[in-house]
Structure formats: C-alpha cells, structure tokens
Image (cartoon, rainbow, N blue to C red; front, side):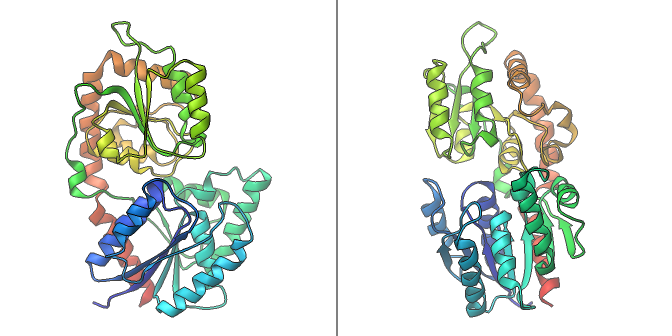
Length: 372
C-alpha cells in the first residue's frame, strides 16, 4: 500500500493530547508512513524537550515549532501561513489538527485549497467552554466557521461527539468516534510500594483538574486507625504556586508530597488509589492508564470517563465537590480490598476496548479513505 505523508498539528506538547500524538506518530511510522509534527515553540513542561527528541527518529518529516498562542493572538494570523507553507513543501497527504488551536491552525491553513485533506480531533479543547458566555460563544462560532475546511472529524469519545453537535453544529463531513488506546505493556498490573501514600494524583496542576478539591478533601481525612491520610501529586502547570500556597495555608506540608513531572506508571507505585477529580475532561489517558494497571481510581463523572469505567461507572462521583471526593476517599480507606476487586473488573473492560492497535487501525483507515 502507498505510504502516506502526514503532518500532525498541535499547540502544547504536554498531557494526554501530546501522548496521543506521540503514540500515533510512532505507530504510523512503524506502518511505513512519513509523519511530521508542528507544535508551539513556547509551551511545554519539564519533559517536553526530551519527549520531542525521542520522537525525532520516527518523525521523518521533521519536528517544527512556531509560536501558537493559547488564546487568540497575533500569531493566529501568521502561524497558519507557516503551516500551509510547510504542508506544501512537505507535500503532505493529510493535515491533522489536534485540540482547538491545532485544529484552528491546520484548517485555516487549508482554506483556499482542496489538498491536503484536513482532519480535526478536538480533544476537549473549545468544547470545555460554555457556549452561552462571550468567550465560549466566540470559540463555538470559530469552530462552526472552520467546518467548511474540515474533511473529517475524529472524536476520542462519544461524549465529545455529542457535545460538538450540541455546542457547535452537526457536521456534514465524515465523523467517527475512535477511542484512544494503550499498548499491551500498559496492561501489566502494578502494585504499590510498601511505603506508598494513600492517594496519588498525576496530571497538569490546573484548577480544571480539581487540584484544589484534593487538598480540601484531604485536610480532615483520617485512616481507620485515626492517622492522617496522605497523597503524592505529580505534575506541573499554571496553578502550581496556588496549590503550594493552599497546602501551606492548611498546614498539609507533611501530608502532601509534590513530586514534579513523573511518568504515570512510576507514580502508580507511590500511591494506593489514583485520584482524577477533574471539573472537565474528554477521554483522559490517566484514567485509562490507571485502569489498565489495575489500580483503584476515584474519578468524577465528566466527559467520556464513564466510557472508560464501563460496568463500574456507577462509582463515578459528582464534579466540583470536595465533599463527594472526601466521601469516596473515606470509602476507599475503609475498604481497599473492595476497591481492588472493582479495579480488576475495570481493567478487563478497558483491555477489551482501548488498545493502541485498534486506535491506529481506525485512524489509518480514515486517512487512506481521505487520500484516495
């Protein structure tokens, strides 16, 4: 079969979106395709440079970085021109935008031409905004305007597909739900270390992820023997200083460990139960990763998390509620064996539906249809 030339466009090379793009890039390269990356030159975390460098051997079309503002800015007018010029010089068949700003740049670059085919995966992005607010309404209007430059939409969850139809429009272009997936090695179970904290959080340190709720819920929490519960939190982000200040104001320095940016599977050995108290999500990798590793998870009922929890979705808690989070944490401390049994049921469900090969099969087939 013909080898395709594909340019993946994203803003910030961090978090689950970057994980998805990196996995997809490696898998497509293994299947003989030529892949390039286009990302913001100013965004990232402590691991970004190393992760991008690790992709260089499989990114045959190169890794290209230019400024892409998080919100609307001057570079929103110049960067799409750079993407267009790059796509033409690389003679790409597929231009795939990831996230709101990646999708904005990729599709704006295609306006005025019929090639390359453009694919857009929202990854939550603008869908997290309230369409009834000024900023949310603006983002939804931009999304609607760009549908004319979209050949196909990929939603990583059925939830994202529903929200897009409700907040933006019902697309006339091709659309598919293709869940994110994990490699076989990620389904190897992990046991916590003997000195593990009671709980662990892995993710961006942003209010959107509910990091403030974790601290509020933890403050009065005690184990069945009366000793204070503990947590280790791994990650970095725009609200890191706020988190440190909150930990200090509540006197929790001895009970909350901030570990910096660390691999998720490493952190699963350092906490007995994974917390994902997000206020908004699409289909978070951290929930899939924790489930695949057989770790107990406390998560909020937002986005597509229920699609990952499957038969255990009744255990999901209300979002934006420190009380609901505290109650779930208390229940885990009281019955860790019950949580472990539930985790094994969830692991079996995730293994049956969220494989990396299944994800790549679906995306590759879509690319081929669009390029034929």
